[in-house]
Image (cartoon, rainbow, N blue to C red; front, top):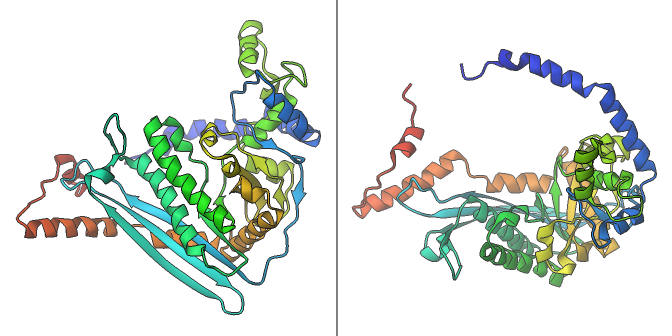
Length: 397
């Protein structure tokens, strides 16, 4: 038997009891209180003043954080392009070094002449220049993280090509985030290589005047919750720049709990559902991401986001700044996302289909490997696999 639930049953009971504790109720009461009086201008000033330092990512905002925007009318006719991708990464246990990116492509047109175009596009790379990051200093092999970033750029580029000549109103929708979070831990050469490719793809949409957005289901981010922490902070005094470093030092020397710790540790989706009480179809105000990696994006491509009640869940929608500055484009993104979630029983149907077109099942991966092996065998080259790789292909106990 691989797992024995009985070994942690008592800890599960303790976990359930902790969720229902009086302290947690006190934390949620404090959150309701701070949400009724949160001031976006005060939060912005405290964060933008010279010397401000936080130990968490805080959403910026120009509008009232508590703003609730009703669902705009859904157009009878619209066109939507959606892409998603999967990949086979280079395998160090395989004698043949290669990777494959498969992009699922979906183009949906709604109206009197409705149609759906579902396809996929595969790109197999194996040459030396493709297996290493172009860097003048050292050879950096393409790994799973780097390949995932390249795939994100390819998804954007493919979507822009699909929607280029589409009848309006039209937009593109991608799964996940438009913020390249995993770039933050990469070398400078990798960052510059990926960013240039990604931003170029975003620029294509801007030149086409075609809105692009991404949808995150069940988002785990807490940017707006952290704005509430700034709003309740009492150190330094209200109105002064936030300084989490100084506050934590005070905790160690004075044995005091920071004021913001009275708030619960919940994601933004809980805040928008249980505290802000978004209704089906409604969205929040537009917020600004303060991710440091966005410093590599042009000003007009900085990422804004809003939360929306799709009828099934609170989702997060991200758009570039140039889209956020166009109310008509934001309205289109808002209503199309809600309509797509309604058609897809909780998740955008275009993204569902793009995923299905993109996914590479294990049998597909084996077929690719076996085809390569047969072609090499026909040339008299026998592929010898490592012991570990062979052990994964069959169990002996």
